[in-house]
Image (cartoon, helix red, strand yellow):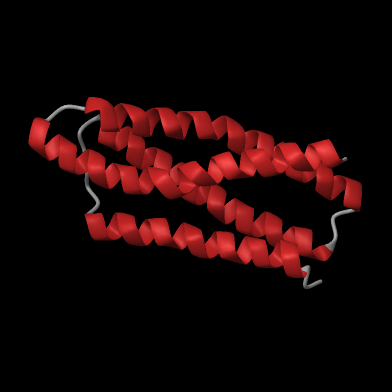
Length: 136
């Protein structure tokens, strides 16, 4: 089971990189678009990072459920799963922003994207608390 946990942690780290970086990258992409009216390397990198991390998120979910199944789904795991579901919604919403950005549509302000980015940090802190404290 240790190898499943190792894979889970590695994939979570990769997925978190995208969750934290892509909304911020959209800000820079928007600024670049305003100057050049083209996707450019920032847009390409943002899209590739998002697309690559989707697979990592799926592997993280599968290995996480595997470990939860092995432990009999204790109460704290249900809390973690609920919080991960919120993070997954955040990730899908980020994907919608990436798709719109590819079309040259940057509807959200820099401030919105920064706040959107920080919300994911709060959810991750709650997930870490649930995993470490195992409150129930």
